[in-house]
Amino acid sequence: MAKAVLSFVCQNCGAAYGRWQGKCEACGEWNTLAEEDPSGAASGPVSLRAKRKGRTFALQSLTGENKEAPRLASAMAELDRVTGGGFVRGSVLLLGGDPGIGKSTLLIQAASMMAKAKHRVVYISGEEAVAQVRLRAERLGLAAAPVQLAAETSVEDIIATLSEGTSPRLVIIDSIQTMWTDTVESAPGTVTQVRASAQALIRFAKRSGAALILVGHVTKDGQIAGPRVVEHMVDAVLSFEGEGSQQFRILRAVKNRFGPTDEIGVFEMTGLGLREVHNPSELFLSERDLGTPGTAVFAGVEGTRPVLVELQALVAPTSLGTPRRAVVGWDPSRLSMVLAVLEAHCGVKLSAHDVYLNVAGGLRIQEPAADLAAAAALVSSLTNAPLPAEAVYFGEVSLSGAVRPVPLMPARLKEAAKLGFARAVLPEMPRGDGAADAGLALHSVGSLVSLVSEIAAKGSKRRSAAAGGG
Image (cartoon, rainbow, N blue to C red; front, top):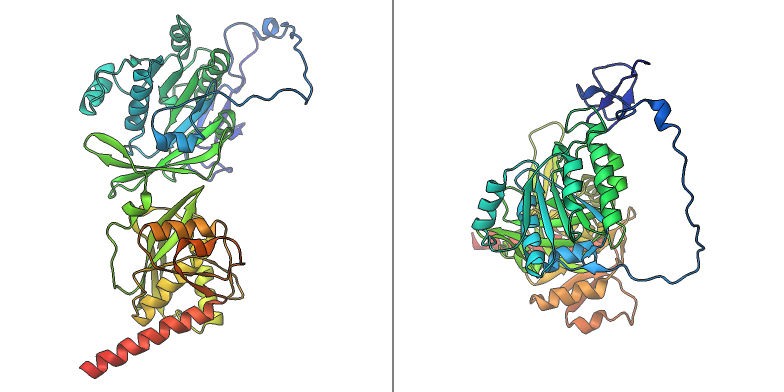
């Protein structure tokens, strides 16, 4: 019998090498290569498996009746928003998040609500015993929900059990890193086992029509652990985010074949589990620093949902040879660009100052519309001039210093008006786009120079008044 050929596979990215080496050249990680059988050899000689003849299947044309994919609502509005309206039959979702962020809590709540709606829901835990899952359900007040529980890690046993009786509508696997299959001879958690186990479970989901949720561990840099091929195999990849010091959690779709990828769901962690937050703007602005220099309210959009959040900036003289630039919740490259525009076109000298920028509440902003709010907060902190508490800011700043329009401007203004704001500083808007219907006083800004001069003038008046009063 021919000797099995082994290779060394990186457990972080899945790259394979013919010999062991300390560093993975693909991802740059050290000591992540493990010896595995690349063929995933099952029992039986290769010559017998090679004799299997393929079967023919029917080919179809592009024309035909397209039906909307049937969805199963989870009874959690925020979860349904992110998934695109509910779980599609036969779809597979991969949920990732930091340890202790609340992934299991979210899934047990969704499973309980769907089970109460007379759907068969199965929760398979590979990390906890059944008694531990029951304790969590009792703490959340969900012990009466008819969810079927099991603590099992063998993929073959799981599929055989799920195939009996009525096909389940929802199956939760917590987590995919603990599953193992007999078809490969690697240890659970390795790249080969994760890939083979996911393939077997996905085949079952497609065949039975059950919606499948796979929970995935994350690495130290926030990426879902295991090979990237698993993310390509599933229909949707969801990321559950949050800061340990904050009570709220954000569910974000990284990939979704059946819905948008820019929607977010907001939850608040309480003693009774996760509570849905239907108006995130009130949560993010609940502890505003009114009248403090360096704070600006940004009117942003996450998917189709407008979200108002406070940007906090601190500009302080530095004692270092190289000034420090620290940003939390925003792209550091955007901050560097805004600082360069302020210095090149607006005369704001920040080369001798440390700059800190923070998005209050821990929300991560990904759109360039926050450029104007960030610039206003930075100049406000530098000149010690508080910005108007009733104003919101949004707009994209170009490298020439011009302020460009951004999408969904009327929606941003309506959300600001709903929360009691009376003024908006925004780019110049074309007429007839419905912005005036929001009822706010609009202050259009064509270039960043005009906004900086206005804020600097207020700072000079405040310093003059303080000097006169002294």
